[in-house]
Every structure is written in structure tokens, then in C-alpha cells.
Length: 349
Image (cartoon, rainbow, N blue to C red; front, side, top):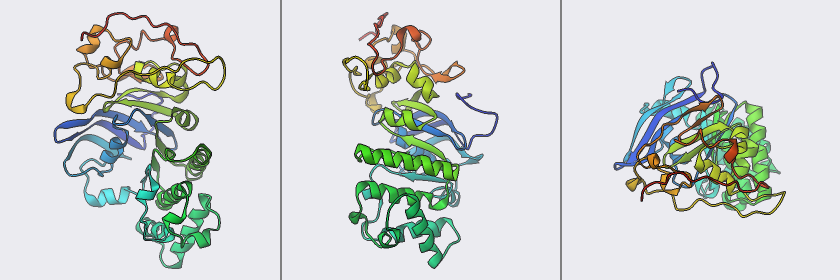
């Protein structure tokens, strides 16, 4: 099935019907996604929605008890079930990943220069003094001052933002085609967050690199990404261009997330909230997984699990009421009064 903004050219990465179970419990329930060369894709959703698992599954990084089915291709090369040699050449090389907590990802007993040099040795032909010279260049590229001296420092001697910069330097060692950034700014204050996002934008342009940004922060996604996929309970429920999604989201879950953004201008208003919690994957409700929390659900939502389908030329939505939730029921945006929502049928208890 085509995705919004898809082109006639072959995507860099294409994920089709990707599913993951842990001891029979579903974590992903059929992910269809593509990433084009040079674009920035945002993945948003509450914890447990499957954002990180999607990429860990695609790169073969899940534990042995995980059962992965479906397809994830890089330039046509299948990654799901691929030999170890194929995955070793892809991970850290053509696809790099940086994680939420750099302090736990870095080795505390090795200088950062040695750790960057190890990544370079794995993915380039450099050796000897050339490794240190390239490590220094990468440290300077990510904005760490006094690079020569800092190469011999240990992770505990860096701030959280500097450790994240070190992780970005290591990720760039293999000159990847795609960088997956998993909550890269969550543990940082807002000033450092802005610096890290600016850095990601800079290296993306310099390396002509695609970016997948996983984040709970809708503001970060709106400023950074070209396209957004909203995930809930192991599925994508809406996918559209960033401007389209934030102007008029159609899935009630996406609308709820946007409605929780505090207004920075205009009249004061109460923030909206989504009642309840993400369902336990061992006890998913019948029909649409979001129906028990949805303010506009109808009876059919309790029995039919909607497919992710093209709603128009610019978005895919998995919702039985997507075509009803148009401009007359626009999402609550900062500074805009909450619209009245007409409740039709409700899901039976």
C-alpha cells in the first residue's frame, strides 16, 4: 500500500507487515512504513506503543525469545532473518542508532576517543594515527571544544549533552545513510535539547542522511521532521506530513496528543487529556485498541479493527471515523478553543 509523500523512486528503507511477539504477546502488529533518502521521519506515541521495538526488530537487536515476522529492506536487501554478516555490515554502518541514555550506552572505563576509534575501525579502512585524527574531526564536528584533550577523557567527565554529542560522533563514524535517534533529548534541559536538534539537522544536511526521530515531544517532532507516524498499541494509526498532521489530525489519538500541547500564545485554555492508559498487550480489547479511551467511538469500533488506509492524498489513517473528523472537528491546537465534539454511539461496556 502506498504511503503519503511516497515517490516513484525506491525508498531507502521499506518496512512491510512487521510484527513482533514476546512469548506469544504482541509488541508490534503489522507495521508498514518507508523512509526516503534524506528525509526526516518522526515516530510519536506513548511508552509501549512500539516505536523503539520497530527499529530493534528491523536491525536484529531483539533477544532470542522475540519472534519477528514481516519484512524490512534496505535498498532492497532483506534485514529480517538476514545472516549475521549482513546485519554487521548494516548496523553502525549504513544504519546507525543513538539511544535515550548516552551514559548507559558508553563504556565507563574507556576514554571516549578510544570508543569512537573502535567504531571507525569497524566501518572504515582507517588505522593507526589516522583513527585518532578522524575521531578528533568527528568530536569537533559535533561541537565538543578542545577535542584533542577531550578524546582522552572518560564519559563521567562529560555532561549529559556532551555525552549525547559523543554518541552522535560514534554514529557518524560509518557515514550512515540513516540515523535512528531514540529519544535523544529526553534527559537534557531545553537549551541543550535545542543544541542537539540543531546538530542533528546540521549533520543530516552535511551527510545527506535520512533521520528517524523517536520522541514523546511533539514540539521537537514538529520542528524537525518532514513526515510523522503516530503509533499506538503496536500499530501506526496515522501517518502524514508534519504540517498536515499538526494542522488537522484525523485519528482521535493523534488529536488527543496534539490537544495536550500547552498554548504559548492566545487565550488561556485547559489542556485536554486522554483518559485511561495504553492497553496491556496481553489483553488487547476487541476491535480498535484505542476505542475504550476514545471520546468519539461508535459501536462498530468495539468489533472492527480498522486497517491503515489512505484517507486522501496526504495521509493514512486507521480509524472508522476518520472521514467524519474533518475541519468542523479540528484538533485542539495551542491558542485555539476546544471544539464541541458530537458523541454518536458509544462502545458497549
